Length: 331
Image (tube, rainbow, N blue to C red):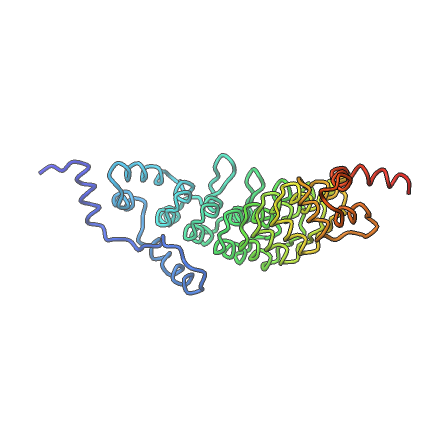
């Protein structure tokens, strides 16, 4: 009986022994990493690109053919890494594929594995010698992508393999900046434990705390402040995190910053304090009541103690910056 190509492929798939499953993500315990390291070589030794094409990886015929055709192109580790196909990556590495292949943005397979949190793929690529210090067109490294996605296991794997927590991208932002910006509080804590500096500044003088507050990431801001970040650090335009929190009218962030010693009498480049940038009178009074400032700021004292319904108090609150400038001109 003459077999069709499809039947040959189907019979071959049935005849192949099942491969070990290494796609399950390990937990944070060291035992999981031991099991993973033991399973990876076995998977690689049993896998070839040809056998994966024959098996179809359990997908439907058309979907499997299309998927295999894409992943099995010579050296196409990028696509396999994006999809999180650990066994495909192992097979391609075994076949001699380039683990440092670049896409149009200069991203490597390792960077894609990190940003998509494919832990097993990241382990395989690092084990195969993927470059940890490579910078994409944006200047991001693999650790930047892992920090952005918040994968604690990949962050730990990268740092313990030699990746630098102080690496900066084009805007001089560190992995800690990206973890803060994307709201990855646990990643922030882990990076700080690995030596990342909460006071690091980018090209605009922004610290990770400035970014966390700007993006309204409360957990990340909390992690940074608990790790020693300066609540009164200023940017190149003299902005503090409290200026931003007040302008966003985010009560939770305002309270958090005030609890960590943020001052309300710091002038930005436009000579505005956080009180001036607050969007409403209630928040302004709240800042003055709870915030730190020098008592010579008589206007702050009047606004804090005066009746908010009194027209003069309301006028002073709405025109505090203008009034302070006029008072200063006479001193």
